[in-house]
Length: 217
View 1 (cartoon, rainbow, N blue to C red):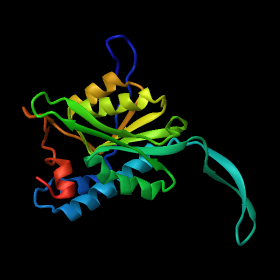
View 2 (view 1 turned 180 degrees about the vertical axis):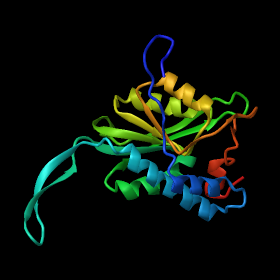
View 3 (view 1 turned 90 degrees about the vertical axis):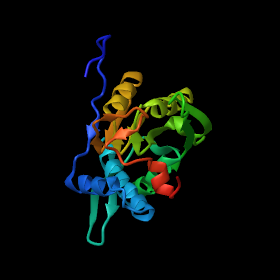
View 4 (view 1 turned 120 degrees about the vertical axis):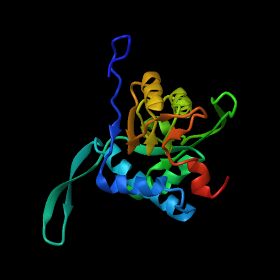
């Protein structure tokens, strides 16, 4: 994908594995309860994390098995940090930590103004060594892209240079806005939906992810 100024934007990675698509169908169902919804969000986040960490560097080490001494590979390079956008992003944290238990977790609090549809920041707490880490921003829904863009802006202001964004469902408008604002940030998602409605909700979507995760209205 090329921008107007001739520079390339990253093409989003869409993880269309059959098991993920099956779980997304269950997420979309309005009759799915909060407990199952949370479990599904966590499971899909785990799958996404598997793919988003595919490019992690490796180094060769020597270990001793019960049979013999051998050379094998372990992850090397920068350590990781996961930064959920509150509050819905919290639903993805357990799943990604199952994959990378040693990662640190930061938090960014943003809410969408009901009138302007723009994100408003109310909280930002990142690991003290965040500049030395590969950062993965988490939010189940990428709608207008405003919250994701603002969250990544905040992280970049701290000096972070390696950032990826993980979501479960995205709208084309959100992908376009995010990749335009941050062409250096790779986007990973499980499904790209049709559009945004007049209230900036993803169609067909799954409703308000935060409300469905925490059982609120």
